[in-house]
Image (cartoon, rainbow, N blue to C red; front, side, top):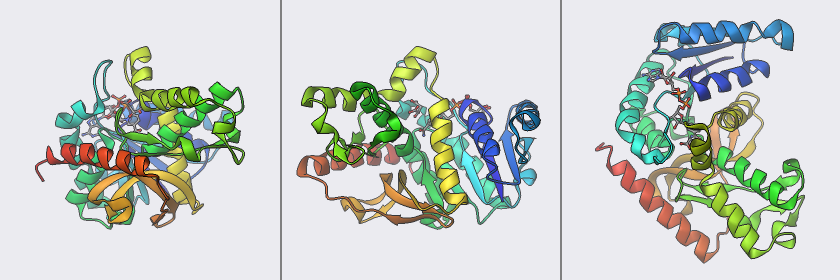
Length: 308
Ligand SMILES: NC(=O)c1ccc[n+]([C@@H]2O[C@H](COP(=O)([O-])OP(=O)(O)OC[C@H]3O[C@@H](n4cnc5c(N)ncnc54)[C@H](O)[C@@H]3O)[C@@H](O)[C@H]2O)c1
Ligand SMILES: O=C(O)C[C@H](O)C(=O)O
């Protein structure tokens, strides 16, 4: 197994570090355009092998795609992160060119790779990568819902003063401050509805905090987050590599599912060795359906800016 992570910045390096610690591949290539950075970070990571006990070898590459040849899974994190006060959508101008170029280069050397897109605005970047590459839709997966769902569970656990491990819940829709849809109605505390434990006002606050989860961290840190994004990306990579068939909300190409066509946005999918293997249908209420429709309109209008 060979995995490539493009972009050796905060999210890319954290993702690569998580992957090597879990020994998900023999080799993990970390590629960046900045001279020496990916080589340096890879060597730094490898120097933890003797301390932490793993055998996966990280390899750095300054924009040399030959080194990525034959990758089974590729994670694209290259691109600008937002600054406080910005939306993810404002990154489209620069990141679209980066994601398009990276996808082309990756496919030259790894035509069969499963590609996970992290760069923002993620739903639109996933759509762009799919349209530009023409690869099978099952092999193109946008990471957003895994992260948003982890934040949702964290805010629920904090409000209930319980372990996040005992909380189940999903966020679907677009990965944007106003487009994501925390499914509060379906969230549980070990099978019990969270509404048994929190008031409507408390649940509304959890949902609102979840939706601006990324913006909150960006304001605190001065750039966007990387620990939870790197862990959420690991969840996708691990389910694919180990064929775990986990159900994870991911941005995938919809052809009629959830009433949408020709768009990538977050829905629960089963992740396995072939990529996303199945979309899980959910019985949404009328207001959840309306929120999904509104979210799709916003994502679609962003896709329109790509002029494909
Ligand atoms: N989908 C999500 O849930 C999620 C979560 C966190 C961050 N993000 C997004 O991920 C992206 C990366 O965030 P970050 O915090 O790691 O940023 P960062 O600035 O720390 O790292 C980005 C890296 O990409 C590299 N890069 C730029 N152009 C490149 C190219 N053409 N080829 C290879 N590398 C290139 C840069 O040199 C830099 O090292 C941003 O767009 C951010 O918004 C998405
Ligand atoms: O908030 C951001 O811009 C980065 C990422 O999409 C996140 O949710 O952490």
